[in-house]
Each structure stands twice: as C-alpha cells, then as structure tokens.
Length: 217
Picture 1 (cartoon, helix red, strand yellow):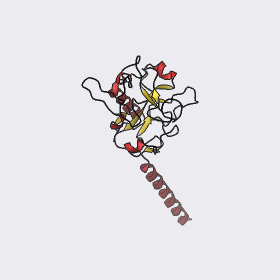
Picture 2: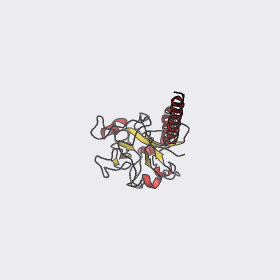
Picture 3: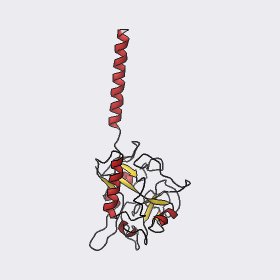
Picture 4: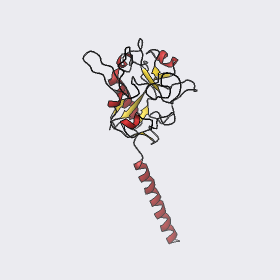
C-alpha cells in the first residue's frame, strides 16, 4: 500500500513538472490583430498613437512587458522620410495568442510560407476576426503597405494622411482571411485601397479600422 502511495505521488509530481515545463516552453504572444481600433476610422493618432494602442491592448492580456509596434507604413512628408511597415516590427519569430508561430522572420512573414490565415490571425484575446461571409465582415486590415511591406511610392494617399485622417483620403489594406476582391485578394497586407478614411467608409468595404501588432522584442 505504501509502495503504491509513493509511486502515485511520484507520478503526480512528474506530471505536474511536465505540465509546467510544457507551459514554460509555449511561445510568448508576439502577434495579433487589434480586437478594436481607436474608433476614429483610419485616424490612429499617427504611428505613435497606433503603437500606443498596440501596447495598451497587449498589456490588457498580460503581454505589456514586450515592446509592441503597429504594422503600418507611412509615406514621406516634408522632411520626414517614408517608413516601411516591415522595418518597424523586429526580427521575429512571432506567435499568436494560441502559441502558433505565424512567421519566423521578416522574410518569412512576407513570403508564401507564412502561417497567416483567418484561423491564425487572431486578436490579442485569441479571438477569430470576422472575415468574408461573416456579418459584419471585418477582413480589411489597415497597413498602408505594399506586398513586400514597404510604403507605397505611387501617387495618391495610401495611409489616410499617415494615419491622421478620419475623412478624406485612402489607405492600403490587406485581407486577414486571404480572400475577397481587389488587386491582390489573397494578400494579408495589400489587397486594395480603402474607399475612404472614416469608420463608416472602412466598414463599407469590409473593415473596422483594425490593424496588425507585432512584438519587436
């Protein structure tokens, strides 16, 4: 009886330690789609405001100890040079709220090998974002970026006034569910331009003012 009790305790301790080790080895949250935008359409308060929104949402789920940046490009303006979304997000790897590594590096993120999809591109809370066929559709994710993650050099607005406009202008957006219409319907970061910059404009084409956040370290 005593031998069985000792063996049972040993098994229980081993199982507990094994569970602890497994949990400790799970990748940290390093990527998410914002569960909500600031609520002013594409006016995110510029890159600084967008980064702060990422940091706040991450902190709300216990990931505020990491440095977060919005995956957003900005175009050159005056003496300010262009900013590429791909240059803002660190080096990877990045895991979602379920521990799935969606990309191992910047190059992997911008290749066909990334694991971004409706099922993997989750919010900071681990929730799936509505996509094409859902009501309402929210698959347009603001980026202002081209396929390679760089800022657009084409004429016209591609960032809603560098993320300060909730009225006139337009912004490039990707489809987190990798389907829909536009020039690149299956692209997560550059599917088509938005119809405008207001919350209503973004919603009219299948968005909600959401954007991607990545941990830089």
